[in-house]
Length: 170
Image (tube, rainbow, N blue to C red):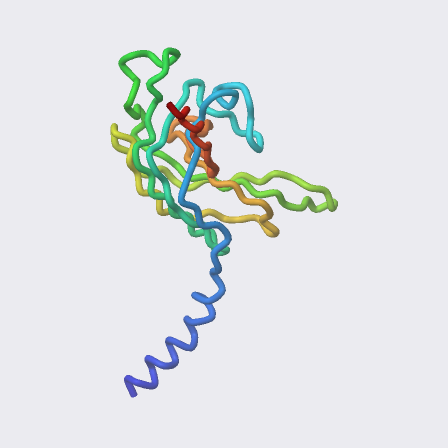
């Protein structure tokens, strides 16, 4: 009897788990910097008004809207425009994850849909484990993942990377 119940439960649950495929997996993010500081938007979202740097970030997004981001060292940059007392720290108590998708409108046009997780604790050293759920639009095309401020509608990091300039040979 127990074996039959277990098999029945697995048969019912297997399609649910199988249907949540991975849309995006990433191992790098880009901290808001350069022309993205303050004035330039990505999918309608402004970067923070000060530059940030990030040591590492990994994450994934599933078709079921499960968003996981492991953030390490997301802090204000050591830059002249950053007040000295903020350099190298995070002043936010929480980070949120955001997914931005291109989608269809009811009239057949194209629109940007941005969906946010709840806030997750962030340390002063810029570490956070975002493990949230978002309601993705259908369709969700060209998704971009952001780490957002906990208290503002501004991004601190976004999926992407910047190559380091080659060091000159001596």
